[in-house]
Length: 466
Image 1 (cartoon, helix red, strand yellow):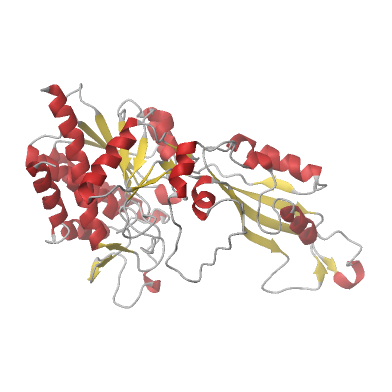
Image 2: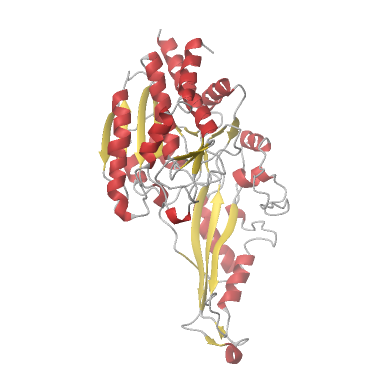
């Protein structure tokens, strides 16, 4: 590790201690960018115009703010900094929108639009998801430029403002702006680490597909005394249909929903991951789901099926009647090793084969994140792992994919690039809920990690050009 690299990473880390990064974060959090609230659309534009453009233009970026091509979505910012067409291009990504602030639910003394410091915790809506994380990306880039005068690679950046409502318009934007966003690798930060004090590198995400199952047999309920045991009960029919999908202990019985094969390198990485939540109330019986798999394999390498909601009749005011219909909202989470195109057809075949022709599958969502995983053998993976390991003094954890949703597949499909996520938050950050916060030690480490990574990418290609 060179003295120049050490000075750059130390300077970046110092930003988390001397108030420079907090000042940046305060400005970002003060803009209430709730994408779920249509009245906040002007604030989405203001965030890009007043917070991001002034941060990128002094670094030599050309910036454009674009209207969302899809109605209901917020604007995008695209920025690029060209040093030499012969150099590789690194693309960064972040989202400037947040979920609703819900200030009435925050602890006394906290406000979602004001950064409040309590010890190592920096409270505010968007601190963790995702304003603080893409602020780290920009600050680290600025640090490298300040210490070396150049990056040694070309840099591009895209920020959306509709991630919290399904990344409306991102797919269309990447299709129409594929040339402007062409890159060799996407390096971005979102989501939490698996463990607070361990750095992990994620190569993608599990996908998610939600759908409704409904049984409707008639209009209106009928007297349970007169008609119970005579009329078909949609609640019972749907309950048995759902029960046929898994064993009583949650093992999925529809083979086409399961991974066809899991690469050996993925299995190897998952074997070394310990799933140990800090919440002692989360009991995870070993016999639930695919019992032969370890917890990490279930969470990051397999398919899961859950029932998000189940309704028949009026649960808050039950009446003595045979109900007319029953409804369940269901969700499948899956890895890239499973064939998503077979999920719904296979479900239909399964229900019909078990005598549940009355069960209708409906309400398939249009906005979702498909599964994606960058090949662990891609040379960019070793490059990132090596650089991060050099900064922190030990190898980071390689996560084949996150368990939650990220727009990995959309970027990979349109840009043909490897996608690598380096999260700078942790599971207890309370993102999407009251009292969301970022941890100062993780910010400090994240700034050093990203500055070291940018330094190493540039050094590699600057030395090769000499």
